[in-house]
Length: 125
Image 1 (cartoon, rainbow, N blue to C red):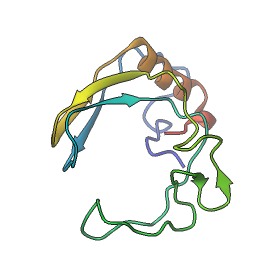
Image 2 (cartoon, one colour):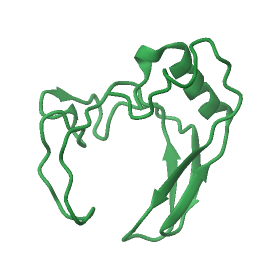
Image 3 (cartoon, rainbow, N blue to C red):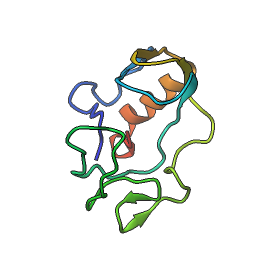
Image 4 (cartoon, helix red, strand yellow):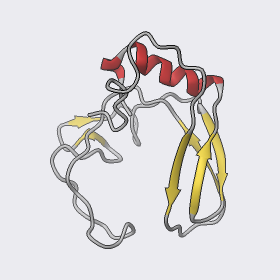
């Protein structure tokens, strides 16, 4: 399942020249951290588990959830704990507390998105 489905917005064969990813962090329990982006190398599940009120509270994984151990719970383990992703980061930024953060365009992030545009079946966001 692709979280960022490019197929309807970016035609196959398009040339990607710039990429930006903006995310919002609503809470944290840690100090400043460098957060890196890594290209996913295999598909992962997105199930229905979601705590109704608190991101910090634990909730049991449901069928097809992606977890630290499973790409798809509980039938398809990742080859590495944390998922199957490229070891070299495509970009990184320092995150210092709640707020919006934007990873700017790098040659690596442009390449990552270009791979997805050229090969929609490899869209493992």
